[in-house]
Image 1 (cartoon, helix red, strand yellow):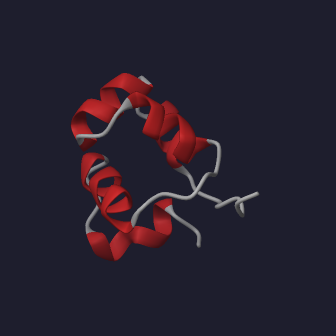
Image 2 (cartoon, rainbow, N blue to C red; image 1 turned 135 degrees about the vertical axis):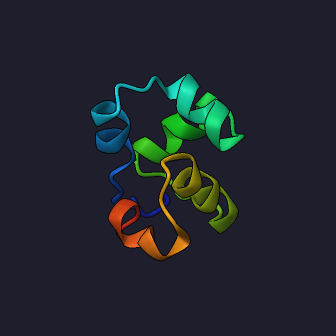
Image 3 (cartoon, one colour; image 1 turned 30 degrees about the vertical axis):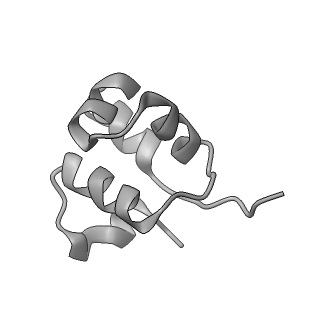
Amino acid sequence: MTDMITNSVKKLREERLMSKSELARLAGVSPITIDRIERGEECRVETKRKVLLAFGFSLADKLKVFHD
C-alpha cells in the first residue's frame, strides 16, 4: 500500500466552486488523476506542478497545496 499524501486540493477546489473535471481540464490531467490526488494517492512532481499552476499558484507556493 502506498503512503497517503496530505494535500489541500479538494479544499481549494471546493472553495473555488470548481468541479474535478474543470480542475482537470485547467491542469491538463484526467479527472481520475484529480480524484486520486484528492484521496491522497501519490502523484508525479510534474502533475503537482500542473495542479499548482491551474489554481493560479506559483511553484514557490507548493506547500500551500501539497504538504509532503
